Length: 283
Image (cartoon, rainbow, N blue to C red; front, top):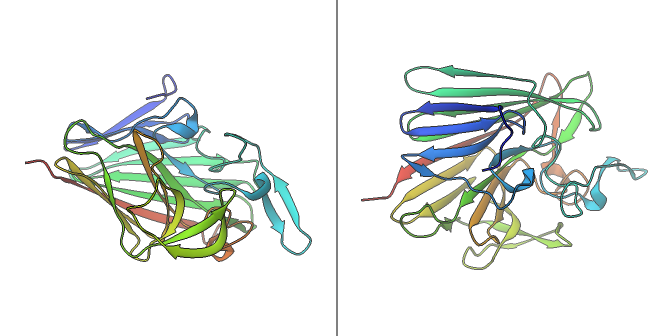
């Protein structure tokens, strides 16, 4: 797994271990449970490996820009960072400004802080990763540094291995979801019923239960429960699968599903909490 030299932090609880890279958004570059590595890499680009935060937007932006005035059409261009797109925000490849580890007998927490510039306003993000023996709880909190407000979409982008080295390849379990139709990789505003048996997917979903399950039969189950009903599913890679919980739709800062973007201030930060529950399926 790619990493920056000398920037790794490791936390453990029971048979669960996470390793973070403080130089690359505080992302997890390893997540090991009962001797099984969950994370993988499709390449060395920061977009392509580990488990990283996305903010102040998630996914792609129309015209690679962010609308700041819907009346006169004013927008701010964002830097293209991957395959012709300004994608997944400004956090994932920037260093943390501070971090700490807290442990007790039942859990261990990695608490990370990051300043984000180059946006409409400067932001401060706080990431919390708390593990116990069989689960992970993550939290993203974002607020402007000054006395202004900002609209944001935040999320997590984990690259999971389709095969864990034992058992069968991964399968998804998602109930009663709606898929956002798209043109040129951007949502049109229309919804259709989601069929998990179709695909491959590189698509955004509304999941009313707020839960997506990945099963590796005879090996492991991961239940992902988010505070918001938005997810992106990507399984077009032959070796890896991404299940990305988010607070809103891709391109929500510009177009369709704009109501899903969160308004935040110093007194009322944007928040997303996610629970990742692990269960062994081996005999």
